[in-house]
Amino acid sequence: MPAAERACRQHLQQMGAKFENLPAETDPAGCAIPYPLVLESLGTGIALAPEAVMNCRMAEAAVRFVKGVALPAAKAEFGKGLKGISQASAYVCRPRNGTRRLSEHAFGNALDIASFTLADGRVVAVEPRPDAKSARFLDSVRDSACGPFKTVLGPGSDADHATHFHLDLRPRRNGSTFCQ
Image (cartoon, rainbow, N blue to C red; front, side, top):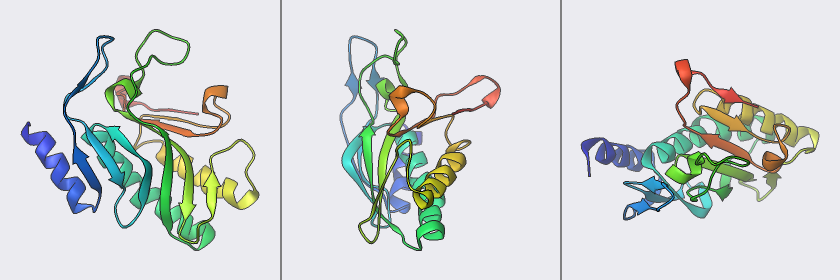
């Protein structure tokens, strides 16, 4: 394993994330993760369910995002911490919707978040018309995701993203972001 991969994993451990290394993933269609891991927890007792296979850079970005953005937003809006996040998709070998180009999911470089579970058990689903308090929380999380992630899609961007946030690290021209 290259030094950068070892360093990434060490940083994940320091952040309190729980994960296991997996063997390389490859597929004849071109999908691949040379050094995948399965992320079980996002640190500080925040479960990820179901566990998600992704590359280490994506895992590190997800943990930083949850600890630095989603957790503070939950405390600000609800006065509660986070107990868990429900993911809808991580590594899966498939093209982007409506194209032949491979999705960032095909490289373990994307995570779809379907809901957030607060410390008191309340579930805040990513949906088109949440209640006012949930809407403020989701808007805050979504707005703050743009920057750490290069692509952020969710309800209102298109029908395929009506019930989850899609977050990925795909490099874009001039370091720009695509957020809808």
